[in-house]
Image 1 (cartoon, rainbow, N blue to C red):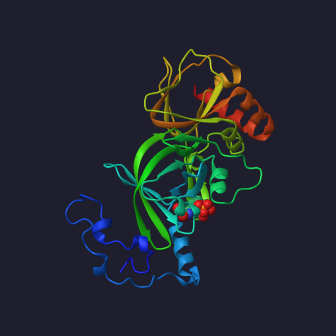
Image 2 (cartoon, rainbow, N blue to C red):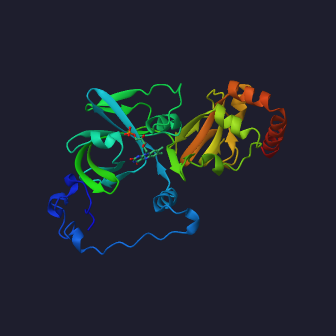
Image 3 (cartoon, rainbow, N blue to C red):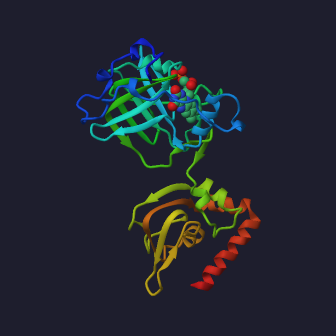
Amino acid sequence: MATEGAPPEFKLSLDSTAIAEGPEGIGESPFDFTAAPEAMEYPAELGDDPAIALRRTLGMFATGVTVITTSAHDQVHGMTANAFMSASLNPPLVLISIDRRAKMCNLLHEGDRYGVSILGEHQTEMSDRFAGRADDGVPQPAFEIVRETPLVEGALAHFVARVDRTYYAGDHSLFLGHVEYARHNEGAPLLYHGGRYERLGTDAQVVPELPEGLLPPLLAAGEQCSFADGDAIVRRGEVGDQLFVILSGNVTLQRPGHPDKHLEAGSYFGEVGALSGESRVSDAIAVGEVSCVAVGSDALKSVLAGSPDASWEMLGSLAQRVREA
Ligand SMILES: Cc1cc2nc3c(=O)[nH]c(=O)nc-3n(C[C@H](O)[C@H](O)[C@H](O)COP(=O)(O)O)c2cc1C
């Protein structure tokens, strides 16, 4: 029986734990009738401890990273969690799984609200801080309060949910939350996989037209920007000093009297404006969703100055372009 050994607050009859007014047949089979589980089987190289083996295997499931927040006694409490999932759109429900030893677990009760802040790729320090691994000197996080619930500023998306039901789940508790507030920003998420932080593989998608030595410093010096299908990233005649490196998607360069030129991830455009300050000669139009890094001419100059060999190689790629034009 699944609830055997459960703390008393979870020893509820199924009727009282099933979601009210669920469709017929859902939540009706009592746990008592489920077959007794067999011991988990796993390869010997994962060691003697089944919990560690399970954790390492579960680690293959790539997730985002959230900070779950609540306020108690006028104090904000936050906890890093990747066990977050959408549960239902109508009604709007989300689910989090919290270790029963975590302080957060004692703070959350049915009827309370919790915040979920989905971290962006730049927020690893934030994640470490709320996982109790903060280094000294990490800046204090800032919160905004929505519906009396703290949310981490600068995160990619925010939810406020009211605990609808709690469920016993072994050494964890599940908190099903009714979403009362949802908002998102643009940007790339922080990922967690195999026990490590990861980022979306935008760099890996780049098949560089730019010399290898220039690509990382240019990506680091620029600002990531996204465009929707049909957006004009650059307009002919306008003055602009940014070079764009395409991370994903396709861009068409349109110039009267010239055939359209199609650029893919790894290619770049806008170099004339960036190098000479002259106005744009082509329209650059996004085909599908496009993600680019835009590098201003000052940043470009310092990257080129820092890598003379790679700059020489880039001259070769520019010369090729001139020849093709
Ligand atoms: C990436 C990452 C994901 C985590 N996900 C969870 C989770 O989903 N549930 C959980 O209970 N703990 C999770 N933890 C561990 C908690 O963040 C950690 O135990 C924290 O210190 C608990 O805080 P508290 O006891 O102050 O509430 C995660 C840690 C990291 C680094």
